[in-house]
Length: 329
Length: 93
Image 1 (cartoon, rainbow over the protein chains, first blue to last red):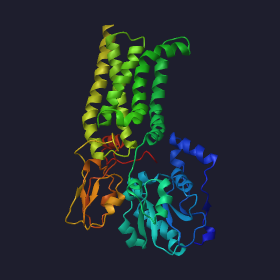
Image 2: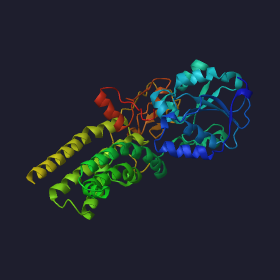
Image 3: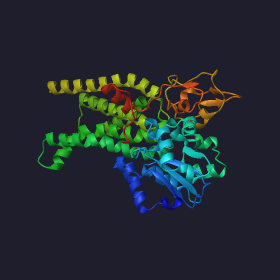
Image 4: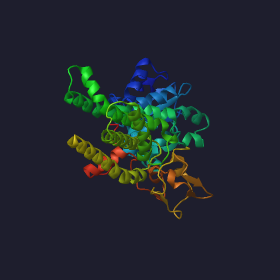
């Protein structure tokens, strides 16, 4: 493949790119946000320019190219079905086999004179560096975790500092995760609310909203605590297990809601809503383990084996209380 | 990462020191400060920080490392239990 047939991409992101990034962060059309796999150029690379490997998730590709303003480089995009580097590496689609295949189909050994591939460090879960070398002769050099460090990494002669190698989980990074979690929670919350509204009596929509609110609001507060507040306040909530963090914060938020909200004055009704809301917070906080950068599968399984029976019991107890109260009139 | 430590004493990372050739590949691929570089080998210093991603195992040319790899995601593990299959990460596809 000659340099002339390789598409060149810019380093500036346009408004369409930025809109797309917000859209997929809210979980809309995330599975179809991709670029064509293959070789691209940034700036005016020659045969000695570095080769940067990435996934064909358009968000990953855009983040990488936007950080390469003063760089001349080749970008080798692997076919990961539009999934980001870390997740695709975990599945093996961003892996040794696809990397070797893409090196061969793009004729990379004729394009560059060196034999080095800069692979993002988080791709290492799918790529065996020594196998890549054995299969296609290219040496894998693991680059930094974050695209914003790539330029400094290249300027330092392909050396990554300890800081470039560490995964973080800052407030901003946690905040970016909330959209997708919220979108998936709303998928079942909205139908439940609609059904409650339909079952509730009342002449107007406003009447029905008024009828449903006392029961729905404490539980929604619990959902909000689990999906939004736990991710943001994560390091400051006591406990290591996410289910425990969720239960603690959920109890505070749901309890506060019940104190300040009129309606459901009976102890039984309040106990039931407290149990449901707190359990929702605990369960949803536990689901957030999938979005973090520091939870081990063994740890998640450890807490699930302990938390799930308690969560199920709490919901069961809430149902029993509600039922007994209803029977007792 | 202060305040962001997970469950202690449960990760499955293991190193067979007799096989380690000191290439330091594990240190390069590990996203957390799990390993410590010694003179001609590495040591597992902080096993509690391991997220069992398997990058070090895959990139160890001497097969000196082992871990029970998986995804640290409750949704995936729950799905795995319900469908009686290995948990896998499919929320991106």
